[in-house]
Image 1 (cartoon, helix red, strand yellow):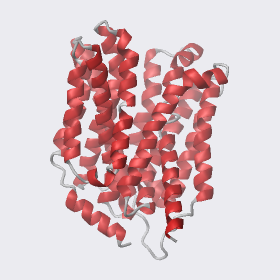
Image 2 (cartoon, rainbow, N blue to C red):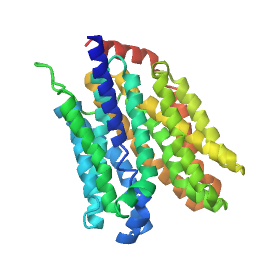
Image 3 (cartoon, one colour):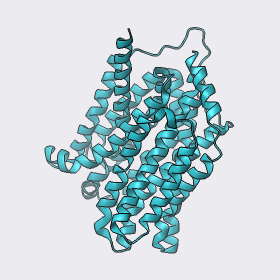
Image 4 (cartoon, helix red, strand yellow):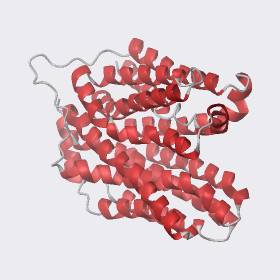
Length: 399
């Protein structure tokens, strides 16, 4: 019996990991082919910025409607709906090719991911009520792997296989998403709502401090990562070091993986403590300071430290809703957290870019990242998690 339980748990962890990959796989398939899209559709730079920023904005805007879908369908079926939407919309982005079709399907794809993001913590709570931190670390590791796969393999491996066609590359990257949907549909049971139980609530509790605290921490950590991705290339060109762009961006993204593996190994010890947030926020600030130095080696290492810190904050924050909320409310807390977090993520780099434009001071390129790290530091220092986490885990374990 224990062996069968272990097999079921292993299978579900594998499915969570695959679903985590699908959260970013199709989105990060865009940057490598942007020059081809730019050429074929004659997009200006504002359109390019909108194309890459639209999914992030939707993560915040659609999180609460996603919570409603979870309340009506359940976490498993909402996850399946999100996967199918992402797979179909991703494959259809290149039809034409047409600019209206590209943007419409990018919008729909971002909405599908936004549905999945609050659904996965609810699925973690349903499948792993006693070990939510480890399960969260598994799917968050998948998320970071998904970012790396499409970003790194599209140009050297995939484009040669599809004769350099960016529409065909979008179709290929949608296939793993559809496979994940099929595996979850055929390999897991439906999570039925108990007979006579009251209808699931879906509207986030905007008055609860956890909704805002977790959202602001998530937004600060994500702003640290996305602002550095956006501004490192222009900063390095501005200071006359364009040869470091690829190395710094590679280090920034690769630096996330050690952070995810560390949280995976020590998930139980780290989850629910505020000290890791504080330490990693300080690490992020140190990494930003290192990017301002003149040493190429130190700049590359510092970019990796920023990636490590951002990944650590992301995973620890995603692990908190299943720890803090009753199982039936995990999607509500997750949706509120994501809505606030990704709105902050969208706004902070925008303001940082505007300050750089207004001042023409190159060092202000990392002002947005510093603001994000400081937000994590100040908000996390006020979090009171341990008692709330113990109460939430006890309630979920007694279901």
